[in-house]
Image (tube, rainbow, N blue to C red; front, side, top):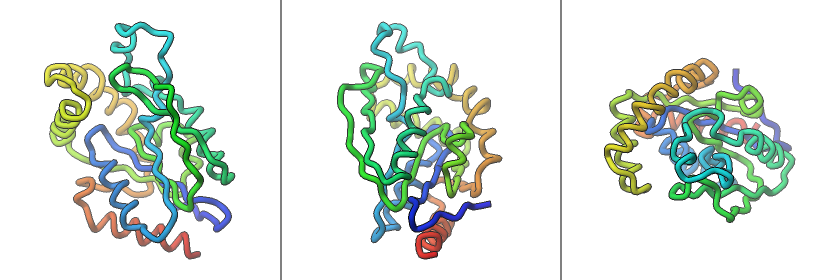
Length: 212
């Protein structure tokens, strides 16, 4: 059952799925098609926990696909601030250093807020803040290919390190924590950003909520 947001409250859309599922593409497609409305996108990856107290060896060994890797309390706190029309300071994560940088990005509240990440439907407190919950469902083989391309090109990782991490943590965490959250989704989108029909339907629904 989809919630109904009021005009006095921003609309929160949660978009989740496994790594490489296309959830970011879906989020960006919704974002792009809702031009004319004020929008904000929050990425769960910004909320990895600060690890300054750990050595680099310890940081590298952290399971970044486990719920404990994220500062979900901060994400929930900041979403509540946005719902109260307060600006927030979003952390900036340094992937090379495996910890937060000293920078933050100031974000103003908007009419529509898209919250995207692998575990955004895992915590019931976070789910309860959402008006629309979306699960992007993509085959495992496509997801690992996309992850390999992203981590090599954007994060400077070696092919072997990406494969090792996928087998050790990414795949088992997907089946343990991410895939089970599919049952909480209002809408399941196969094929990610290539599913234009699903994206058009989502955009229509959001516009209906905004105008109601």
